[in-house]
Structure formats: structure tokens, C-alpha cells
Amino acid sequence: MLRTTSIPAAFLRAAWFMENAAWDVEAARKGVIPSFLQPLDHRIPMVAAGDIARTAAELLGEAWTGVRIVELEGPRRYSANDIAAGFAVALQRPVQAEVVPHDQWETLFRSQGMKQPTPRIRMIDGFNEGWIDFESGEANSRKERTTLESVLRSLVMSNANS
Image (tube, rainbow, N blue to C red):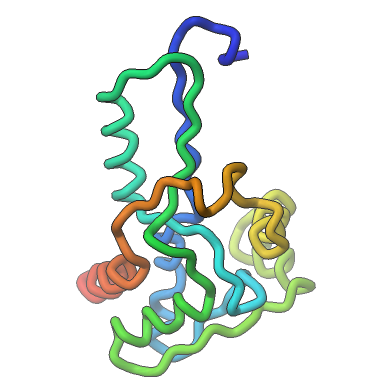
């Protein structure tokens, strides 16, 4: 419907938030992070929340006509193994990722208080199976500068102070 209006519209499609790893800081301190991203070496687009905010602010200052879709990710794609490696550097200790078996997801999510885990499970399945990705592909997405490693360092430091 927005394509039919004369008002310019922009859609900012952000990748998986790097800050989702905040849930894993305590586990990383113990050396093993549970992972729903599978297989562990499968890389997906991720982006830092600060980069999303900066991009949104920049878009508000720009002029265009019609509909604009901006697909936003970090400087490269990352896997669960990359998250574990980033935590290992930030914590200066070995950290590994460990697969959470798919048949345990619903029970685990419900134990965490989620009443309807199916949408979350389907979203994660979409990343894992590759059907959630940018329409224009990796080559045509907008790349931002914040690395996963810098976000993980920040999460570790913030968690140490809380």
C-alpha cells in the first residue's frame, strides 16, 4: 500500500541483533554458550543496535522519492562459533558454542516464561535454514562498521559492572 502513495517511505531491515548475545554472557564465563543458531559454523547477517540507530538517523536526514528498502548488517556475517570465539577473546578464556537440540527448544522457552514459543522457533529456523535473509543478498546490503567482537567486549564489561 505504501508504494501507491506519493509520500516517500523507507524500510530499515536490520539483521540479527549482535546484542542478542547478552543472554550468553554468564554462560560464556563458564566456558560454554548454548546455541540455537545451527549448525555452529553457519554464518548469518548480524548488526549492532548502535549501527541501526545511526543508520535510522541518517535516513531521516536524507531525501528520496518512492519506497526505499535498506537492508542493514555488520561488516561481515557471523556464526555461533564466531560468537564463542569473540567471548573467548573478551573473557581471555576458552569458550565454545554447544548446540541446543531442536526438540528441547519449546520446553526451554516455556520454562523461561514464553507462552507462545512457536514464532520464535520459526524465526530461528528461518535463520538456520537460510530462508530468512536479505532480498537483495549479502552483496547488496548496507554494511556497518561495528564488529561482533567489539559488541561482545562491551557486553562482558557491562555485565561485570552490574
